[in-house]
Every structure is written in structure tokens, then in C-alpha cells.
Image (cartoon, rainbow, N blue to C red; front, side):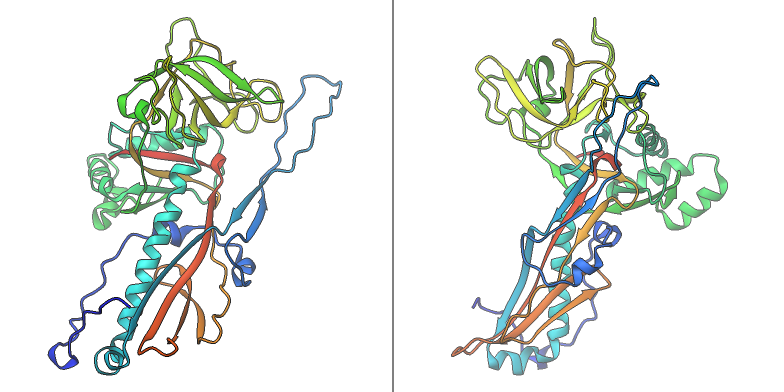
Length: 413
């Protein structure tokens, strides 16, 4: 047991100081509709699967060519675990902390909630392939939020439960630009709250725990990469692209998993590449963006092969998603190291926190904390043969984000 730092109860009075708080907007707004799943006893590795809407493509003829019916699914696996524990001797417990245990418990729960929030927020990086922002120019105005929402919806989006997650540092500047616009009622609202709130049919939240993605060498160096060749799957979709023009040869850190890429416009001799709308398969105004699914090293010839998501397909199937084929000579840019928020719609951020089993023979309780949105287990007892009274708070959880319903917001670090 680590040494405790305690004071005699006669030498202090409770100050009434509040706990330092984080902005736990991800946990509090996540979709926890798997309530029966949460009530079940589960352990690490437990999985729940939910369906995604089917996709189809039309045929421009009355002669039918039957397409496969593909039942799309996405899984959420409980793969995270965390605990906070502490112990006292019998003397410490009786004379120092017995009447102080509530504050220890609150402090432990708030630390747990922050760890879960940080993990759930990682979906802004790991489960998004579209993005708004270049990682250099700040997102600091209502005009930029409106532009981001326009691109989000132009691709195709769910119209209800649209949520945006902003860096708390950016909010003050965004609100300041709004006050310079002639919009009296809205300006009254934001001036009184100094929050973005609801704007353009989107509910905006702010977080001080947005994840930072550290880019590979190409992103940090601002490299422009040129397509050399593509790797296709059995359906003709591009699943990997080999690029030339890396910053250096034989670089193990050339590309990092979750690096974000965008095909450049205005490359001489090549048309601008555009995403098709998710439903209807017609060219949208969205440039084709994708993310790396694994680290990639550059070769001695300054080339790098990047595994990508989503697969990019020009063939007319229900997964067709780009306007023209990807060919040698096209160019892409890579985002630098950045902080990531996001826009999502349709309650597409899922969080599950199933109940843990009792820790026999110790008294055990499972509870939901309404202040932080965290459900957790608590158990306590004496260590056999030791002068130690121990307490443990722990929990397991899993989260996932439906990528097609989401877009990352890129803030400079």
C-alpha cells in the first residue's frame, strides 16, 4: 500500500471547494440505447451489433440486373477498462477519513469519468474519414461552422440530432464573430450565454478534452504526394494507394495510422476528384478525403503505400463513391498534427457500459452517476491478515462512431 498523506481531523475544516471539472460532453451526449446490454453482467470482449441502413444503386434501363442485398452492420465491443483504488490502515480510517469518504468517492468518480471521456472523444480521430479544416487555419467564426455544416450535409446526412463538438478555446472567438453580425435575437442569446448553443440546426458543445492526433512525417512536413499506383479489392474498389514524393526515404514514421488525406484540386491534366452523394450517387461538392488505417514507412525510393478507409470505388455498385477513377499523377495533401472535434448526426456515437459482476466476498455495488454519465462498480473490504481497509471504483466500456454520419473538425494544436 502506498503511503497516505493525511492530517488529524482536529487540524482542518472542510473548505467546501468544488472539484475541478472537465467538459464531459461526449459521455453525456452519446447514444446509450443499448440499455438492456448495460444491465447485463459482462466482461471485456463482450460485443453488441447494430444494423446500418442498406445501400442500393439504380440501373438506367428497364432490363433488370439484380444486385446483391447487403445487410450492413457495425459492432461495438467493450474493450476498455479503468479503476481508481485507495486503502487506509484501520487507525487512519477511524481517526482521519471515515467522515471524509464521500469526497474520496466523488474525486475517484470524476477521475474515472475524465478517462472515459478522453477515450470516447478519440472517435473524432479514429472513426472519421471526412474533415473540415487544414490544421493550420483556426476555426473561429460562424461562417466556418456554416461552411462545415454545408459540406457535411452536401455529402448526405441525417437531418435530426445533429451535434457539433468544438474546442473550448475556439468558442470565444466564434461567439465574438457572431456579435459582429446583424442578427439581433441570436446575438442577444449568445451574448448572455457566451456559448455557440444551437446554430444552423446543429447543437454545439465544447470540450477541453478533444484528442490530439500526431501526424507522420508527411503531415508534419506538409508533403504533397503523387499517386503512383492503386491496389484494388475483388469488387474493384481502391483499398491502398502507393505515393511518391515522400519527405525522406526509408522513414519508419512517414505515415501514421489515422492520418487524414485530401485529393488536391487544380492538378494539371487531371479532373478534380469528388465524392458522390452517399444516397443517389451523384457528384457532390466534397473533395475526396480518406484516412490511413495503419502506419506506413517510406521506401528507399521515397515511396509509401497507404492502406485507406473508406475503399474508393468508381464502378457502378451500391458502394460507388467517387466521381472519376484514381490514376497515376493525381496528388494529395496530408493534414499536420491537429486537435480533432467533429460533427455527427442521428445519434451515431454509441457508448455501452455494461454491469460488472460482484466481487465475492466483498460488498459490491453498481451505480450510475448522473453528474458525469458514468456507470461503475464499487467494492471494498479488509485485506485478509493485513491492517488495510481498501476501496476500488472500476468500470468497463466500449464506444464506436458511424463514420458515414460524421465529419471531423480540425483545429490547430
